Structure formats: structure tokens, C-alpha cells
Image (spheres, rainbow, N blue to C red):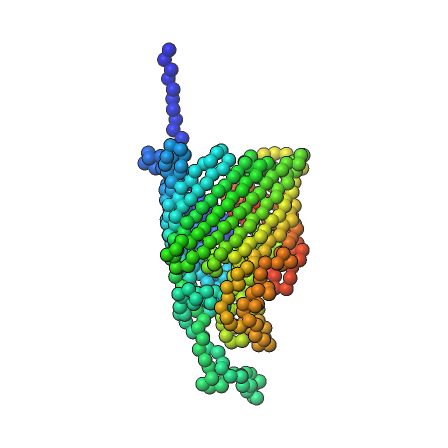
Length: 420
């Protein structure tokens, strides 16, 4: 008996175009090209481009999914990432230019878990503005950075003009101070990872769990040496009649982290109701500190330790139709904070208010930003995610439960491109 079989090859190439928006980063444009069987080699090649008002990112990767018969995957990548200063979105008063590349390997232990390891070379240049914090300035100068510009301050008490009532600095009493800085850091990084995933589907799961552990080690020979580890997890439990309970959390810790590797908290993916990345350690700008004037908008610099967790109750929709599978309303309660458990601050003083009161910088860090569960921030609220043609659209209303002086709160938060 003869058997004729017609085989139709699946398309191996895909392209993507996407537009996103977030209150923390503005409009984002994304484009990507991928080929899963490049030139018939079985290798996957992808190019990803992303541009927003705060960051540009370009990445080229090549992956051999069957590097060995045991299922070991090998990949290479090269990237360029540039952050931008934008008064409407940035919480930092510095920008970074980073480029690098690396090699990585992955191995599936079983159908639910895998491990990975990789080596990466990264070159990062940091350039500050004149209102960068004393924290960033001190780190740059202590690790090979240099001053690139100066400002002036009055070395004596200001004199009041009796005719106009205005204060001014006497002639010849102005003193220069450094107010802009630059630093470059070359690091050789070892990246390690483990993941476990039993979610029943990637979008809007209703059961299962996922765990991820990632470690990053800057190896000897790097301009700065540090260690960083993160763990995040989530679990879903169906309750019946369309209700789904989700618990989630993330922990992070770093040793000797450079400031541009710090953890941040606040906003979507952390604790809603607080503005994005605004919780935790804050320091006055160099210009304000040197002129002994109050900085009413100190720079958020992040911390070396992160704690965040929460719970969501996904609600069923009282409607029928295919579109209801693309929408998930939730009630949530969550908390988060970042801490500085090392306070590796040079000896010096900070001026935190207009009364010219001096505060020891290291003591200020230890008193305000060390690990303290009482400094956690919490919120409750409601929100929904809608899977649209241009990406996930998320909207939430959150009520901060224990905001404190200096917190930046935002009840309504909206973005395109993230699912809860």
C-alpha cells in the first residue's frame, strides 16, 4: 500500500510591533524580528528594539536550542542600553550608557524546572546632572569617577541690600564646588538562575505556581565587585465560581552594589498607590547641599535590600462572550519597601532643611533607611487588566494605608504593557 503524505512547513520567522505607555516612562515603541531556523541551522536569531522617553534598548541574540543531545541550550547576545533624563518621568538625576555581550547556557531539569548560567561583559558610563544626589556623587568619586563641571556658593553670610531687601554674596566671596560628575565601570559578570513553573497558562493563570531565583556576581578584575540575588514567586488557587486567589512576593539583596544596580519600590509591580520607584532612601542634591539650601525634591537612590508581597482576588465577570477571557478585574492588598542595610556612606554632613542644620550622612542613613519592618508601605485597591490588540492595558485605584511625610502617592495608575 502506498501512502502519500503532504508536509507543510511551519513559518519560522515572526515580527512584532508594539506601543506601550506607563506613567513612569511615557510612550514606548517596540519592534522585533525573530527567526527560529536561521539559514536552516536550527538556531534562533532575534533582534529587539525599544525606545521610550526614558530609555533606548537594542539587543541581538543567537540561540542554539539543542547544543547537546541532553537538551542544553547555548546562547549569545549583544546589547546597548541608554537612559535619558526627563523631568516628567525620571526619579534619578543621572543617565547611564551601557553596552556589552555574553554567553549563556540553559538546562531543563524536567518539564517544570530549569537552571541557567552565563558570563557577561558590561561597560557602563554614568553621567550626572547638576542636581544629582550626594549619595551618587560620593560613590562615583570613591570609585574612580571625576568631576566634569563646577558651580559656586557664597563662602560668607549673604548681605542684604537695604534698598531692595534682596540678599547677595559679597564680591570675591564666591567659592567653587563640583556639581557634575562622570564615571565608567567595566564588569565581568557571572549570572546564575533557577526557575520552577507549573502555571496552567502564561496569561491570566488560574492554578499553579512559579518560582525564580537569579544571582549576579561581578567577578574579580571588574572595576567594582558586587553580588546580587533576587527571588520572586507567585501562586494561583481557584476558589470556584470564577474566583481565583493569587499570592505573590519578591525578595532581593545585594552586597556592595553600585547605585545603578540598586532595587527600587513603588508603583506597578511593587506597591500600587505610591509613585513608581519613589520609596526608600533619598538624598539631597549636591547643589542644594553645598549651598546649604533645602532640597524639596531629594533624589530617590534605591537600596540594596528589597521586600515586597501581596495578594489578589480575581473576580468573575457577570457577562458572557469570548471577550471576557481577555479581561481580569482584581481586588488587591500589597506592601513593599527598599532598605540600605550597609550604609556605606563617606564621612560628611548633609543639610536637610533651610535652617542649615547639619546631619551626619552615615548616621542619617542608619537612622532612616536601615531594615525596619515599621517602614514598610502598604496599600489596598482594585484594578483590571485587559488584553488588547496593542498589548495588556492595566488600570488600578489604590489607597495607601500608611503613607508618611515625603512619600509620593498616586491613587490612579495606568499603563500599557504589563499584566497583574
